Image (tube, rainbow, N blue to C red):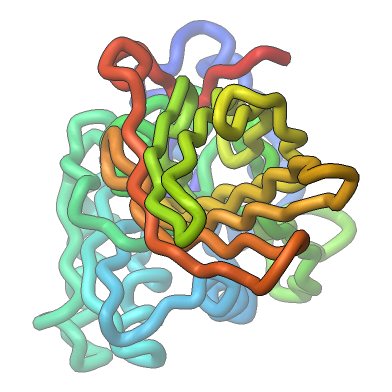
Length: 312
């Protein structure tokens, strides 16, 4: 399915083939403008939805956009022509690939937008800063592990109509789609995610402060971009009151007690593999203190971590 298009010819199993067959029947009966290219139902994403997807994905001139199931190429072509980006799309149907390349040449962006006849499961997506897709739900779920494994933390994902299951989007919206060739309501759902760094595990930091060094330890559980956990400061329990993970950027707030006075330890840093480096700000119980810190994760935790796994 496409603005974008992948269906039975991708390796999705019996359930996906059945879903694809249902989609083909729905397209045949519900939309005169929907075209069936062989066994892949091809449904154009309305141009206003394409533009909203790219805006939601914050696409700009420095971005490299990869569209999985690229159809007539309009997503990558629009990203190049209106947003200054570069990139490519892949589709299984060589006729659509040829059409997309001709469209890119006609729009004057063939040097920045290319299209290839490839299986999306065999496509190297590691170069992307933005990945877009309009695929069946079953295909999205099969694609999800590759997105988490191959894409750099901070890579943005934008999907049309179907989400990624229990990986909740960072943002979503409903877009009026009067030109949509399928559906009675003439609306589109657009979903946005940021690929999270893998931060689950036990972390330790030894931080030099004016009154003497302090040892910090925090243990994090992770479910995609949602993190929670526990912490200690110099061996004493600290309350982890706030935590946030966006791509490779992490923020943690620990609260301790200094003789009845609450003290906040705000850590803001960037994750690079098994290291978090950033700035800590301590407030309460005296003048504010700001100090750089570096936290290291247990090597065993780093080896076995999974950005999609956590205690649920």
